[in-house]
Image (cartoon, rainbow, N blue to C red; front, side, top):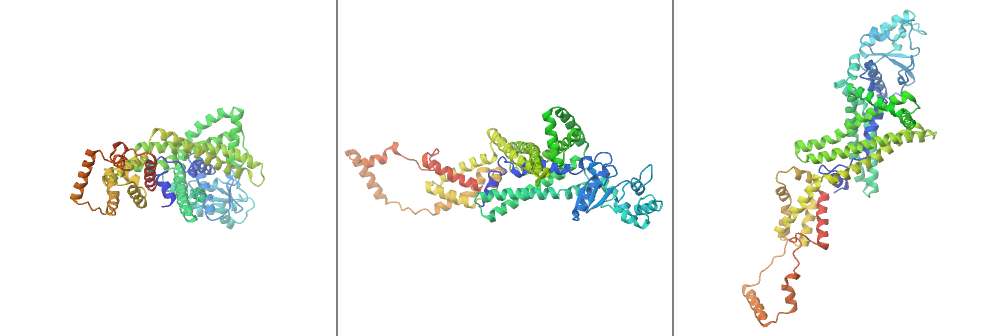
Length: 536
């Protein structure tokens, strides 16, 4: 059986406390950083429909293979919201075509405010917007454009309607979920790559074949990608809520106090620099880091929830895990995620500082590399420490099932009066055929002892069938032997060898019948049962 299967059923199986996979520790801060590169946090604010339209249309351009630069976040007056393949675009989304087009003209002069830019309008308002722009050109309100026929070149049809953009700005509807699914593609791709590379490297370094390493790495990549997907979609939905806005205000007030100290101010500005890829100071740095911490808190909670739901399912639906196990896994996962987030923030700040000093690397790359390194290292350490602490408080379900399996196999062996070698053969038969997930199924069974017998007693019967046939001596021979012993005893002629045979103090019990084996026999028993456990 492949080593990965052994690892998944014992070290990280449903019956044991989960050691947070290293790539998963980096998911929350990575997803939070990606979300902060969008305007998700502004979707629930005033003008949220417009912010949503800007992001969804930019995503549509990217999916068409266009090179997109988002420039609207600089808040430059009359500046472009984005530049796609060198074309500057200003996005306007209002409830009517008249209001949409009118928003692009100066209230005082009546002139078009975005010279040299395309005006992107809702998909359902495109035709009406073109006619309105033609009229504005005829009236001389568009500097540099004299032919009304050029209105079609000036107006750009958006990828979504006004109502769709409005829905995308809100949580809990098909349009917003659909957008979040599409927007999560980049996160999922990166998460798959991270999980794949780390698992593949670990497998190769452990001596596995390339085929097995590729198989295990692909499965781990898909798992990490799946966690990232649900974390991204769930977190994006939460960011649209009023609770998210309230948490930002709360975090900002705390950071303002921190920023009053020299060390705190420096730390905040370093983190903001790493996240944005450019230097920001004062209130701007505090505002950005407030949103970043809020997003990290949300993604952390969602990630832990995603990792815990399978355990809750096993505890409530299949009955294959205890609630103590669920709680233990929850603590381990939450600690690993929190440590990973802290490691990302610290590593990103250090990486950005180091990257800014290297021309080829740069601040952004340095921040990402530093963040990943910090998250992976701190997340792994935090998860291991939490797991070690919880192991002292709560036994894993798998450990309890291992003890039961050990006990019941010994009982079966005793009933069939197995020798030491027979018992080892018995365990080797079981180890070669035991199915994956056996300990989980054992935990869920009603009668656990009977469950073990139903699976393995047949192997004991096979061992009995293979024993040599014993032909008992004739009755008269036995009687003659006993009579001879009695005569020798009366005459005091029992040999030293016979004394040793009948000396009770020299009796060594059968390997199996001895409930407390010692020395080499005890070691052999433990190794044999461990072999079964590794396959379970």
